[in-house]
Image 1 (cartoon, rainbow, N blue to C red):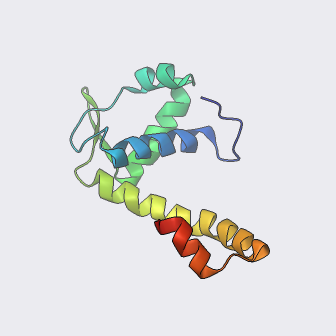
Image 2 (cartoon, rainbow, N blue to C red):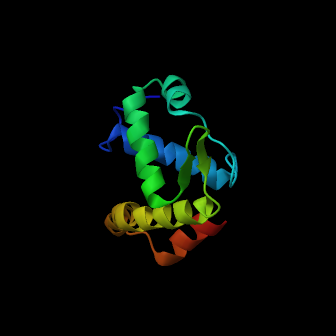
Image 3 (tube, helix red, strand yellow):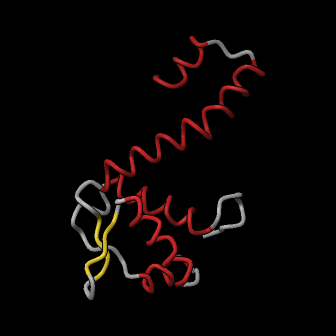
Length: 117
C-alpha cells in the first residue's frame, strides 16, 4: 500500500482501511481481526504503527481487546465507524466538492442527476 499519497498519518490511513472492512461486512461484529503483527505484515508497515492504529480504533469503541486472545470488532463497531466516516466526509470532503461545484457552475439539478442516476 502506498502511504505517501495523502497528508494523513499512516496509522489513520490504516484505520480507514479497517473501517472500510467493518462497513463492508468483511469484518463482522464479535469477529476476531488480524493480530498487530499479522496486520503489519499484510500492510507492509511497522507493527508499532499498527499498534497505534488499534489503540485509536479501540478508543473509539470500534474494536476491543480480549487479553491473550486478540482484537475483535465491537458489537457497535459498524455504527461507530459509520458515524465517524460520515463526520469526516462532511468536514473534509464536502467543502472541497462544494468549492469545485461552485467554480464549475454546476447546478443543484446537475448534481442530483449525477449523484442519483
